[in-house]
Image 1: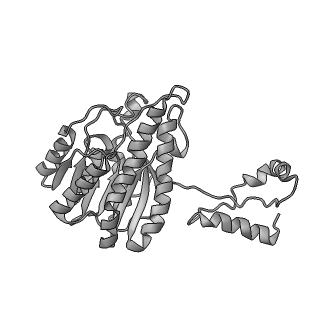
Image 2: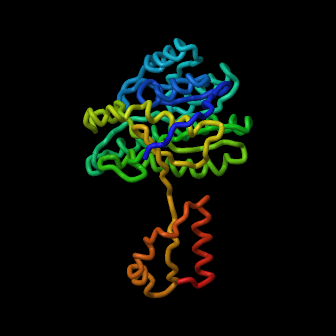
Image 3: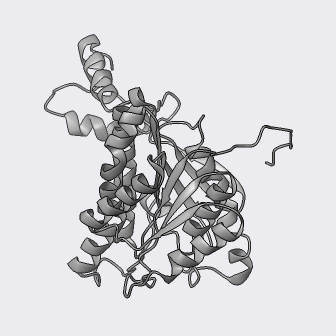
Length: 310
């Protein structure tokens, strides 16, 4: 289904400072360029590594900075590795020295080491978790107190359908990407009173990370530029909080972690047999909810138990 076009005031980021990691190419480059085009001052972070994480260099970040400046925008380059907390801290301090604030953080840096779980080494697993999950943790931690003091912040975690739904050969990547959803859920609650809104973006885009996975005619539709409006939505002044936004080829949808109404069986010797017998009720989605926080699961369970509800 397509939407009708209507005249809406443009989303602007004048006076805001944004950090975009992994911004030397692909999605990150698109994100950085569009934020700058709409008035943000941008720290373009990129380690300059290959798709598998090897090598490094400042040139990709510098190239994007040059593009932004050529269009009249403001940007500085950073080659900090998101897996190095000290380098991340220095990147944030660089932004503070240059512009005095940090309003937006887009955690986008990452690479792939795809293999079936049987063939995957523990190093393959740990390396992907380090860059995607811990990299986002280090960057978010470095800006968190700044955003609290400002009473304003917008943070995007880049998750993936591989984490939300699974993908063959991506146990490491999927685990890290789903962990980011859990991080978002808690930080969205903790940051709420400081107007820090934390969301996840699950992109489908033709980048060097996906170029070997899809045919050319499909890749032509899945441009990074078709995803970036979703990122802009998640970091705008009126952004949602705790949303998992899926985006690709100009289509946007929301993914939710839900809780079914369930079935109360009670503490009885044949509880497992009763659970098997009531599988259809367990999986009935007609009364499911999207919990505001984790406590709602326990609240629902205790309520059913106290009422003896079957």
